[in-house]
Structures are given as structure tokens and as C-alpha cells.
Image 1: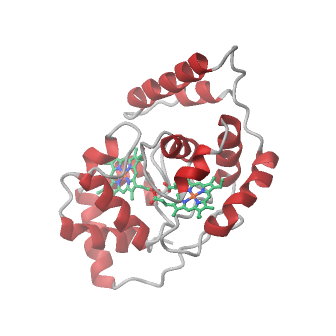
Image 2: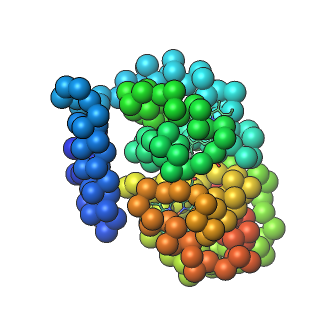
Length: 213
Ligand code: HEC
Ligand code: HEC
């Protein structure tokens, strides 16, 4: 299925915003291209070859062992694709990812997203968290309705990313970034969701989410 169709076919409460984004991407591709763009057909095998450039930090199959580098194995494919676009367009700022994303073509991004999305995520490297903190985190996740968007067991849902398997350090850093509005996102949904979260709640949330098997 062509990427733009796959994107607009999604039906959910999040879908109207997403459809607008997908249309914007399709329009910008059409405007920038000198001639009509063929539908982006992701090539998994090409993705596997291109992913060698990512291995030093993300691991060969996208399972990172460095807590400051997110695991991208089994991540929602569309999410991966647009994070690369956000880094390229400097809407998500990171000194390591910026030059990497800037060097990728649209089809590189599609191939890489398809490859990493298809990899099997490893269980979280972190040991079991402090039980009391994890229990508090579980209660907070319900209070803030985090899984409404991120899906059951935080496995990802539609275009919201999988959170299960991300390190506590990375989860904390991203949550602080969304709250401070320094972590760019696609449509503001997550920036908005982070605003009511109390600073003191971020670590227990990460403890809980980071320890889900
Ligand atoms: C030099 C180390 C390094 C290399 C090489 C690297 N990355 Fe990253 N990547 C990072 C770091 C660090 C982050 C987290 C940055 C942040 O906080 O925004 C990241 C974040 C990402 C994200 C966002 C994940 C998420 O959960 O939001 C994607 C997607 C990604 N990288 C893809 C790639 C791809 C594809 C390649 C190879 C073409 C690659 N990276 C190569 C270090 C690297
Ligand atoms: C309204 C839907 C919604 C709700 C509610 C929501 N999120 Fe999100 N979240 C998203 C979306 C969409 C993204 C992707 C943001 C982007 O475009 O980069 C995201 C991204 C994230 C990320 C970044 C993951 C990565 O790989 O970098 C973290 C961490 C996160 N959310 C945690 C939470 C937590 C914790 C809660 C509850 C306090 C929560 N979210 C509630 C929609 C939501």
C-alpha cells in the first residue's frame, strides 16, 4: 500500500490530525519534486543494508544497549519515519541525529523505518524497579490516560510510539523535554499531554513503563 494511503487509512480519535499531517507530507513531496513522485514503497532488504550506519549507536537490529540511545526495534514504522523527518527539518533537535537525518533521502527513511519496525524488540535491559515506585507509576499512568494513546501494555498504537522497552533514562529525558516544549513533536498531541504531568510524577512513570516486560 502506498505510504500516503496507509497513513490516511488509519481510523482513530488521533486520525484527523494525522491525516492532515500525511496530506502535508504528500503535498510537500509533490511541491519539492521536479516530477510526480512515485509512491514510496519501503524496501526491507535495502533497509537492512542501510541500517549498518545506525548500528554503532542503536545496535545492529535496533536494540540499543546504551540507555541514552532509544531502542528502535519493533517501533511503530510510521513513527520512525516521521522522527527522521523531524530531525532533518530541525523540528526535533539532537546533535547526533541531525547530521544523520540530513544525509538520508525520503526512500532511505522509508526503508530504514520498515526495517527497524520489523525487528524483534529485546526485553528491557533494566532490572526490576523498586516495587513501590513502579506501583505508583502504574497508578499515575492510569490517571494521566497514557495508554489511551500508547496502547495496551504501551506497545504502540496507530501513530503513537511503543514505549515498552525504552530505558528509564530516555523516558525521563523525553518527558522533561515535552513538558519544557524542547522536544519537538509532530502535531503537539504529546506536548499537550505532558503539560499536566507533575515533575515529581515523571520518574515513577518512567520506572513503571521502563520495566514492563
Ligand atoms: C552517533 C550515534 C547515533 C547514530 C549513528 C544513529 N543514531 Fe539515531 N539516535 C541517537 C540518539 C542519541 C537518539 C536520541 C536523541 C534524542 O534525544 O532526540 C537517537 C534517536 C533516533 C530516533 C528517534 C527514536 C525515538 O524513539 O523517538 C530514530 C528514529 C533514530 N535515531 C534513527 C536512526 C537511524 C535510522 C540511524 C541510521 C541511519 C541512526 N538513528 C543513527 C544516536 C544515533
Ligand atoms: C493524546 C495522545 C497521547 C497521550 C494521552 C500520551 N501520549 Fe505520549 N506520545 C503521543 C504521541 C503522538 C507521541 C509521538 C510524538 C512525536 O510526534 O514525536 C508520543 C510520544 C511519547 C514519548 C516519546 C517516545 C520516544 O520514543 O521518544 C514518551 C516518552 C511518551 N509519549 C510518554 C507518555 C506518557 C508517560 C504519557 C502519560 C503521562 C503519555 N505519553 C500520554 C501521544 C500521547
